[in-house]
Structures are given as C-alpha cells and as structure tokens.
Length: 283
Image 1 (cartoon, rainbow, N blue to C red):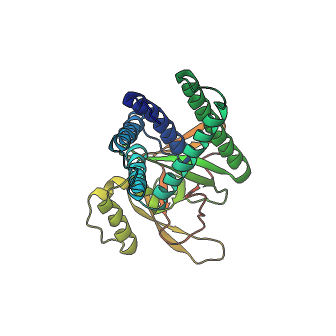
Image 2 (image 1 turned 90 degrees about the vertical axis):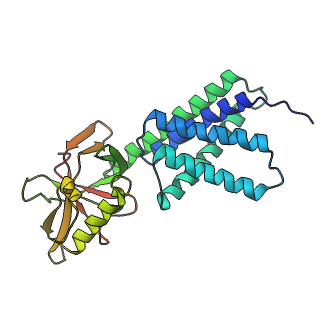
Image 3 (image 1 turned 30 degrees about the vertical axis):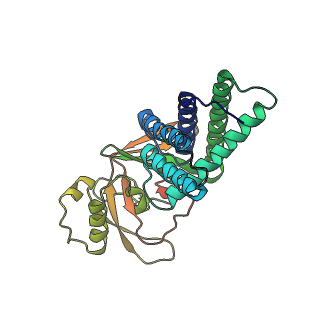
C-alpha cells in the first residue's frame, strides 16, 4: 500500500506534541524553564522524527529504539535541565508514559472520525489542560494532607524545583542573622552549582576551616550547632541562596536570602521530599 507523507506536517505535528510532553513532564518534576528552552528541545525531537522517517531504518529495530531513547534523553537535558542520576531516568519514563496517555486519549476521541488539524490541536490542548489540572489537584491534596509543598530554589540564575515538607518542629535559626534555617539534601545543588563548588562544600563539611575556594564566600557558609530528640548535639554546614518560593494552594510565598543546612548524612528527609521547611517560613 502506498502512503503519501508530507515532511512539513510530520515536523509541525511532532513539534506540538513534543512541546506539550516537555511542559507536562516539567510540571511533574517542577522544572521551571523558559518557553524558548522547551521549544528548542521540542524542535530537536521533531527534527529527529523527520530524520528517522527519511532514513527508513525498519530493519534495525534495536538501533531505532536506542536512537529514540537518546533523543528523549537529549530533549529532557536540553528542555528541563536534568543532566544525570535517577531523576533523569524517571523523567524519561514519565515522558513515555505521558505520550502513551496523550496518544490513547486522542485515538479514543477521534474514533470513527477523520483526524483533522483543528481536531488535533483541540485534542492536544484539551489533554494538556486536563493533565495540568490533575497535577495541580494532586499537589493541592498532598499539601493539605501531608504538609508537602512544591518549592523552587534560585542561585545566580539557576533554578531547582523539588518538594518541601513543612516541619513544625524545625526551629533552627542562624546565630548571626537570626534567619530561619531549613534543611535540604545537597543533591539539589547539583544543577545549580559548578561541580568544583559543590566539591568545595563537601570538603568544607568534612574538614572545617580548610577551604581553599574563594567562590564559597558567595554562599556565606557557616556551621550551625543543633540538637535533636534522642540524639547527641551535632553541627551542620549552612549556606545562603538567593531566593526560595513555596507554592502553597493559596499563594506563592517568596523568601529572599533563605538559609539552608546541608544534610550530608542520612536524616529525616524522605524520598517524597528533599527539603525540611522551617516552621517560621509560612506562619
């Protein structure tokens, strides 16, 4: 059977779908990037789809699968800024699962009818709005039931998103400025700080007073003594970032110059959240 394929239609269709997929995955993983970054990554995916169609590698299925996986990884790294680790793998799986849901929704909606351009755009936008609403609803329920809120950290133009647990028992405060101190996992800094700066923080935590990096001054590192119930006193390394946003269902709370203690050792932070918000930040 003979099919006539228009390469420009293939490009525009994949561009729109890849853009929607990246935006949805970005919402799921709280990756705040510019529309230009999303559009650039979606363009790469659309060009790849045209390339695969043009080359016609039907007899090399394993190679095609590997190329598709590499393309998805490149799109996520370019569009969402996720570069390594289990978070990148989770984002890829989420992207394929979301694509499966979108494809199933559009196929079911267009059952028995010819899928025109207007129907395609309408279905794509409806699916995007529907999944976005579901993500917002799940975040609201999570916040109300578990005191877990989406948070956004900023430093020198780099942004990192995660979930934070509002800990009413966290009463830590900076002894110099008196600012409330939250606790975070150092892995959140991997996409915000250069590798040598992150290594410098680890070295400073292990060997206080032996830091040779002058760039660490920008983070205002200090040591904070603390005490937990049932444990001996300890010391944690604290840093100061530029901005913290806590996304509550009712409003977005901005904290300028937030102070964070770095939990290098296993702590009370769970897999569902990577920040323990200080009790003074919301009330």
